[in-house]
Structure formats: C-alpha cells, structure tokens
Amino acid sequence: MPRSQSPYAMDEREDAPGCVVLIFSTDRGFLIRYCEMAISMGFKPLTASTPEAATALLRLLVMSLVVLDQESGTAECCQILRRARDLQYYAPVLVIARASDSNFRHEALSLGAENYLDHPALPDDIIHALLPNCNHRERPDSSIAFQAGTHGGGIQ
Image (cartoon, rainbow, N blue to C red; front, side, top):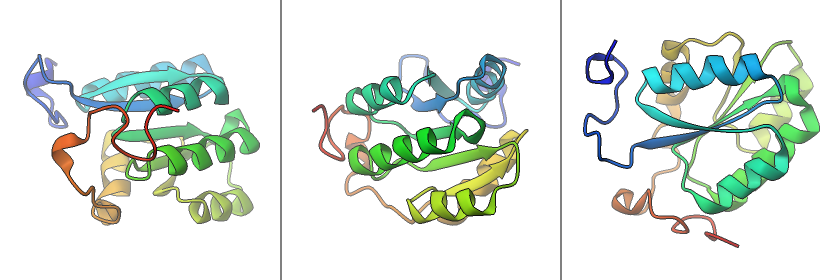
C-alpha cells in the first residue's frame, strides 16, 4: 500500500523530514518486523543493535519514538531508556517484551518508558499504547521538534 494510502500515515509530503523512530534490538528479525511496521505508520526507522549505537543516534537526531526490544537485554534497555530520558525527554519510549517480567516492566515504567507491550505488537497496539500519554510530555515548541539538539542537551 503506498504511504499516502496508509491508515497510519503521519506525514504525506515526501520532502518532509517525517517522524523518526529509533528501534533497538540485537535480533535482525525483530528489526525487520518493526522497521516495516514503522514505515507503514509513516515513520522513518533507524536501527541500533548496541546501546552505544542507540546513544549516538539519540545524540544526533530528535526521535519521535524509541522502541526497545527487552529480549536484547534488560540492562541494555535500561541504559538506553536512561539516555533517552536524559537526551530526549519528549520522545516516548515503548518497550516490547517477548516474555513477561514484572520486575523489568516496573523498572522500565519507573525509568520513564511510556508503555510496555507484548511482542508481536501491531500498529494499533502501538497507537493505543501512546494515546493515553500523548500529552504527558508536551513539547515546549513542536515546530522545532526535528532540529537536532533542541531537546535534552542536543549533540554532546
């Protein structure tokens, strides 16, 4: 389906910067699945398979969404979540879990994750997970949302 016909499309202009989503996982299949889903929703996906790569992207670009694969490591997800909150306070962070871990769920939510979803999540699941909290962290000026370095300290 062309992007302009997608029910999840967020930006119809081809030359617009678009909404960038960072997807972290060490699993190639997970990255492919969620990249395809992000594209179908009108996002421009970027992937990282190490916490260092994720942190570098968080320093360089303003994200509209961060998706973390819990299966890639609890410590790694927590590290990226802390960096996302430090560098990009306004970007919602979703944790995708393949196994139920109530301790990690509580820790992720207490560190500032927007929500915690079971894998495989569908586009509607992601939208519904974000909607209750979409105004939780209102940006002071949404017109500058895609300028690198405008939120959370910028490029360091």
